[in-house]
Image 1: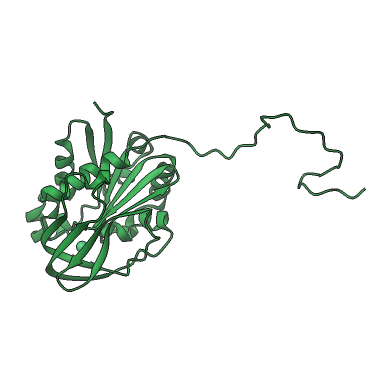
Image 2: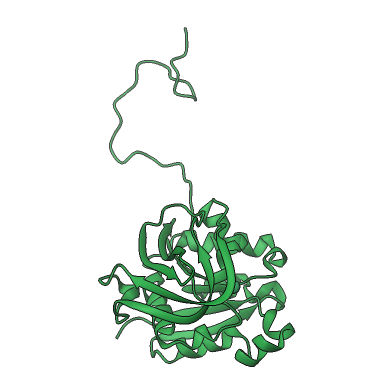
Length: 257
Ligand code: ZN
């Protein structure tokens, strides 16, 4: 039996409260649907957190107890506190996994971890998307088959302004002709980061069984292997150093006599 993985599903939870069409699809919020699908897996322990909670539900204690954090945001990226963003980044560098969904491409945390604009081209026309599984041997694509087909999606097109992924596992084709790097893996510090494109709020994409499978696989893949606090320490040599006849001073430069 695999070690349990503690997952925190984070959602901005704004569209579902303000837009009747979105509320109809996700009455309790997208996070509730994502959390429920992950909870079906015996070794995943799932909690949720949303923007309006104190510290956005991402206190030091919650993050310390989180192995993998999933992130959905769109209209309120600017309302996420920089303190919380720095806290999440620190945890990723220590080893926590982060899964960024759809419009989370413009979240503060994703842009900070990538170091680029993370911009893209987009269009909302309910068009068809086919996500090609180009790495069938990767743990995240296990059981997915050749592709995932979504009948109605928002289009995201290249160029997606991200650093070249360590591993690219899905490429999307859209009815309108664009392509997009839809499943991207990176490492930042000791943590793993996965960006997954599907998930526009006006389509029931998080109910799709293949999308749910990718999320569960991604959580397992992103689970920490280590948890290492940053420490830039001054250390004693392991071996005995040969005596130095010159005076190198503090900066390592030979001092004139
Ligand atoms: Zn969208």
